[in-house]
Each structure stands twice: as C-alpha cells, then as structure tokens.
Length: 217
Image 1 (cartoon, rainbow, N blue to C red):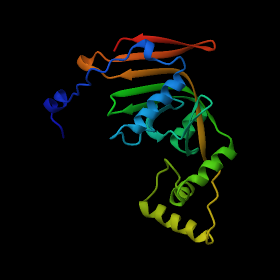
Image 2 (cartoon, one colour):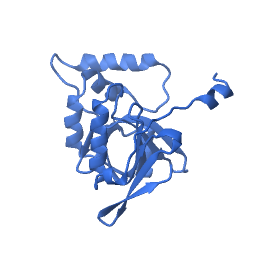
Image 3 (cartoon, helix red, strand yellow):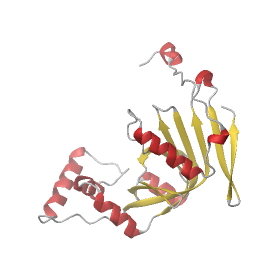
C-alpha cells in the first residue's frame, strides 16, 4: 500500500500549453472530434476512444466504468453494451449520463453531459457484424453484471455457442446487446497547465446556440 507521504507527493507538471477561448471551435462536437483525432495521432495515447461513463440508479447512487466510443454521428456519441448490465438498467430508469475522456499524453480532459437513447436495431446489427467472432460470442454468453460461480461457466458457454455454428456461419446478435447514443447538452474542455492554473472552457446550450465560457481551474 502506498504511504501517505508518497500519495501526497504524486503530482505532474503539465507544462506551458495555454488554451484560449478564441482557439475553441463554435460547435463542441466538432471541437471534441478535433481533440479526439489529435489523441489518435499522439504516440502513447492508449485507447483514445476510452471514456468513463457515469450513470445513476433509482436511489441516486452513481456508478462509473470505462466504455469505448465507437462513433460520433449527427452530434451524438455512440457506444455499445449489454442492455441488461448495471449501466443498462440504470439508463432505463434514468437516461441521463456523463462521460469523461482523459488523454494523458496531451494533458487533456473532456467531460460531456447528456441523455441517452438506444440506437436502431439495424445499426446495432451492422456494428455487431464488424466485431471479432470471439467478441460476438462473448456478448452472447455473458450475463453482464450478474453474479456467476466461476470463469469456467463463461468458457463452457462460449464453447457451446461455437459448436452451434456451421463452418463460415456468423453468430446472430443477441437482443440484449446493442448501442446507445448520447445526445450532449453540456461540454467541458480541460487543458492541463503548470501551477495547477489549468485552462477550462464549458459549452452550454442556450436555445439552438452554444455559449462558450472560461471556468476557474
């Protein structure tokens, strides 16, 4: 276990990369796409499409986990999961969520708040077919977020599903698996800076317009 002294001394100087309001694009989705594309090109950024998704259950208890952004389409952020998972059940009760991107090498963070909807079943089927067969089978056999007695249960179930497939046959997407589209209504773009005087800009909706404002770090 890390000592209190070690934890207190863990800090990173983020350098001298300033961010000014006139550098921010008028549309936050376009701004997110630009930063994401830069993260993809940046050496050392592992899984730049990873985003922490926070949801809330019916009692107000929040929970968070990392999921993978798979597309930015028509102003919405799309990811895929098991609809019966904890996040799926919580989104069924409360369709509001927050996602956070963290790009360590660039010292950047983006927070997005919005509401979710399930994408069309045909869209989910199209994406499902692009996944490796192992991932397709995993989605079929895993009762995500449910208690299971052992890993062997999943391995055995996977083998049984493999036996059902004829040579060249592809798995069929299960009804409990598919995509969500997040429609954002608020963004924050954060650029790390020395002395903890980070640059932060929020985009908030005002009618059909986006208002950009600097926030104190």
